[in-house]
Image (tube, rainbow over all chains, first blue to last red; front, top):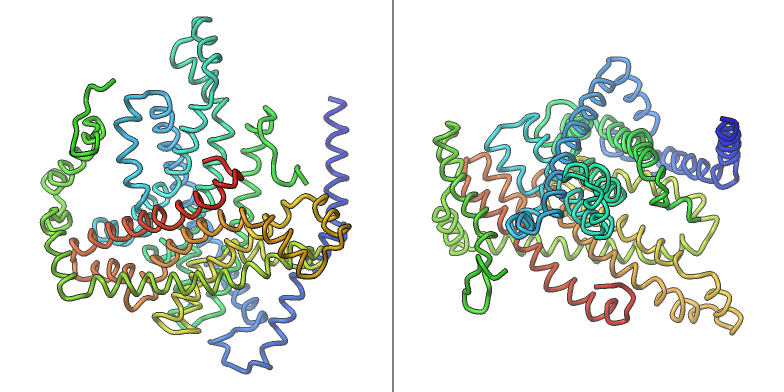
Length: 277
Length: 262
């Protein structure tokens, strides 16, 4: 208990220190500098608001979108689609990854067809999906799970295959059943690898979400970016792009990092990039 | 273990591996009658082949493929020509890196197809906006790998080169470029893959020709055979680029020098 409290205090101090560290301030200055540059370039370039909206116009559009409730609703829609699509893809990826990594027969049978589908980028499927199901949620969910499936699958296979045979033999000789073996040995050992796949897939899927919303949705952040431009409300397009960037940072901080911390870090199996600095 | 294989010329074909493909074809043929989806949504192999012959004969397929590849190549040149020097400058200059990193992280998280609508306003539908979006995607991908490459050079080597009087151009040609080369080269392949995604996506939304445009345009005319042909072309072209350009390039350089495992 006591050490936990001390750790808490230390990490609190550390985060406070990083907040006031010169590096962080320079970063904030950099962001403000870009904004200032953008605002001062408006009269210099002298083109219409439609072509090159000012930060002030973008801020007004953002406030309007929040007040009317459009932006919160769109963010909710996007986030819901994203989480649903990614969850389906991750579940299927892990299941098939365990199957292929575990069984030589399944690997012989499924690897070629999976490689065949992997070669076709998910973007290319979207026209066919639209033809089959029309514009809507189904296209987005299938596209997102398609994107996430492959990195999770390949990394799960890698993780399962890199479990030392000794451990598997040990578990069997202690009387473990196949299910117990997967639960107690294979899954924990393959977890860091699965998370590498999840991180990769989550990043790709976020781009895929925005793209498929541009094509197949009537709400969401991708739709906001697309619709703003076609209605000559360029400021809304830029609000959408900024929200997209912030949303990704949010997803990374809120969902991906804590998941990593919960599973991988606890077993001390992986180091994050920042830790190595 | 040789059960279930048969020989086809030089190749050993795994019967087990063929099974899912047969199942796929069977599903493709029976889905319309099972789910009540219209027949035309699932074109036969013959129909796709006929479409391929038709579009090759009138030159549309080649034109679209060449347009797409030309754009990808142009954007690849522009994106990398900007990203490599800027990446090196950022990695070597501590305060530039402190100021720019959050901005670049943010721009990187929105790089790619999200720029398509804005690009259309700036450059109009077609070539200009598509090239802008791909170059943007490739720029941020390569930038990241260049910075990582330069930062991976051990500090000791910097000091060693400097203490031997290496400065100016010699520092770049003897230390930084060779040291960062592996990361940059491996990064090029990733950049090309991302660029290919962005190309297809951007052409679907903002193209006036090209493979992505051809595939998306066919949806309006219910031309399912053109869509499937487009999907196959997009898949095969990527495989060909990866296997014929990037894999051999890696084998000749990085792997031969023993810097990564095959």
